[in-house]
Length: 206
Image (cartoon, rainbow, N blue to C red):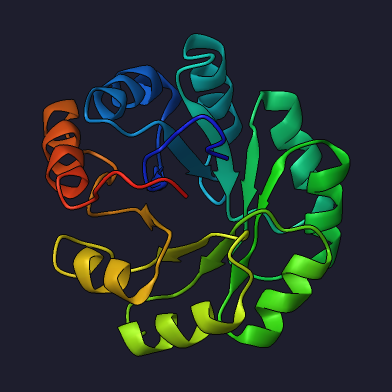
């Protein structure tokens, strides 16, 4: 997902994003240094928002879909211009279809067993979810056994306080939702939130 970036991956999770605001929100995030954006499919008109961002920010923003639960949904995202697929779970059919279409796969995992199943079937990234109650010790233990070539992204409860200890434990990146964006928030506040969070994320070659 970040082959041309030296920054730790930070994915802005834009749940509830409306097409009418998609480009303004995307520009605010880009201005704050975020170039990866996920629009979850479990809200109306998500595919429209993905298509708008893909069309208007080509080569500047990598946009994909979250909460992708079926292989059919993967096809829909690909047709809309999405470049990566994020799921809350480890679904082999979703991973396989994602790779068939040449997209990046980021399935959700919570255990080492799920992680290795995902890797076996072609996952490019792993989404450790939910991280709200996960300690840095758990991340460190998982990173001890997982291959270095597969980045582990922490999702759930990510904020300015959790980023430093998670990084110290070996986390490779983050997916951040309501602490960056929630429906009804202003473009200005999205920029401020993103800027504050990105200040906690150092540059690092993966």
